Length: 416
Ligand SMILES: *Cc1c(COP(=O)(O)O)cnc(C)c1O
Image: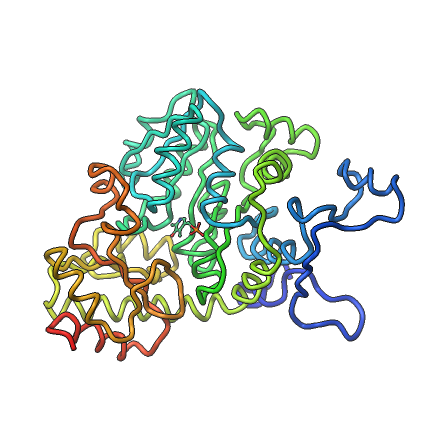
């Protein structure tokens, strides 16, 4: 299994049924707690000396199935599945940093993450310093002795900038700190974080991994790159002494953060993530080819002021993105329509594309970020995240490309 291809692992990793007459999909184990034969056995499991599930806020067999699958696809040492992508980022933040510490982050981030950094991190005494991650020298200049980790998205949502991840991981490694990647837009299908030297990979599993918009979830993967006995986080270092450097981060995350915050995944949602991830590679292929076809068609139609897609010839990230993501560029593109009014009129004229706040769905989705996700974001921060008043973000679905192109072309040139 270790040497199997991505597509094969997506289907055959996870918990395998033992014996005969077992179901082919992972059973949903909707039990809060788990019973033991003796008090001694229960103590062993609680102490971490015996293997087993005790309470579903800490771990659950259905959730564990998805964690095994995701860790296999990332080539990592393990994963923790949580209640949402935001919970994955928040729990990682609190496992690696505490009051007085600093984080160096890209300024091109998903709106929820900007809110987490601006509100909760700041109120917890953690300083998040931000810059344009497409300039590695700017990143290096912000790193100091208080830096605990570097953070960016593999493709910024919605600015669609592409940082040189190997260079950024190198800056982290020189400073002895991990690079944490939000890989939501690429998924392990386009990028395995471990291959570029990133130490932690977080995902909103709500998006492409589940794939049909059926469940909110998140996950954190330890890529196996970092020796956590050298972590600058006291709780991670402490856990590494108990469980070893390879598992110190995930143990601290699960036992010291997720368990106490209560950001656990529901078994039902985890079963949807497990079903979704089986078809991830097929869907990503189609999302990426549809997005490229739509971007090329809209750009050549001249019906919109600007089309931003990392795969368009002439886009400043095209070469780097091609190398980093194996010749594919993701399923998100943005359009600048000229004004907020034109953006709204265009969105209201679409027949197939849904006006809906999500990405990575089988259906094509559109949103006006400035009036929705970024509405509470200060102007300067919003601008740095690439959100203008005339911007429409498109999450290209897996419909037939000709139908999506026709829908967009007609909406842009007068509508229905
Ligand atoms: C959606 C998203 C998140 C947040 O995930 P939720 O599951 O909605 O909490 C984080 N990062 C990126 C890049 C996203 O697109």
